[in-house]
Amino acid sequence: MMVLELGLLPPDNSVNPMKNGLATFISFILFGSIPLLVYISTISLEWSIVCTILTLGCLGITRSYFTKTSRFWNCIITILNGCLSGGAAYGISYGLDQLISN
Image: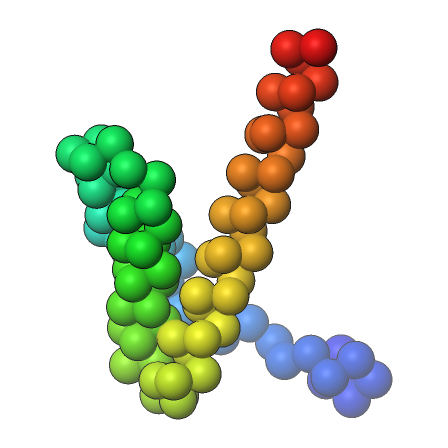
């Protein structure tokens, strides 16, 4: 019923959640630390933004290797997703700062 009516497949028992969680944690630490280290070492927001975009592109290419999909589209989607979420976080924090300081 789940497959026929909703199009949902039963969970795959071969997937290891610990392995997936560890891979996510390592990629977050590895790819997330690069822009942060650039910002700390140069104190330049512009260089940090450039390194963030390049790092997101590398993350998209790395993801395409494991998912066996297009490198170009994975790179573009990852960059757009990262820029959108980063911009939203920056905008919310800026708005909260303005709200608190006034």
